[in-house]
Length: 134
Image (cartoon, rainbow, N blue to C red; front, side, top):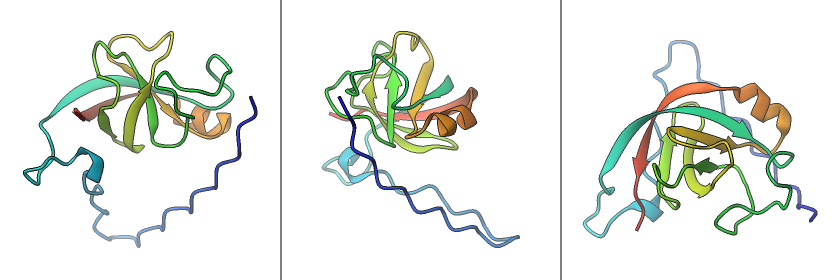
């Protein structure tokens, strides 16, 4: 199955030297609850790797039936439920929409459009915040 090209994201503006770092973006609206705040979160130390369109089983579809795109990650659903939102330092917000044969236990796999970007990410140990979406 051929995948349509994704529009390239605009590069993040560089902050001037000595500037206060930009704070993390607000919790995505889809995980806010009716009382106005985000649902309870937990932190989890995980090994984070990356994948691209060129990896996986080749059908171009995630475990939840969506097409991979930036902001998607693969998880072990026994540890992080599918549909959860994660804050991944160095990557940003990611929704758990995929699984992977080697993604077991405290491991996640974040999606990048190109293999070069995935290889640049490499393998990292990060502390993620997990927000359960209902």
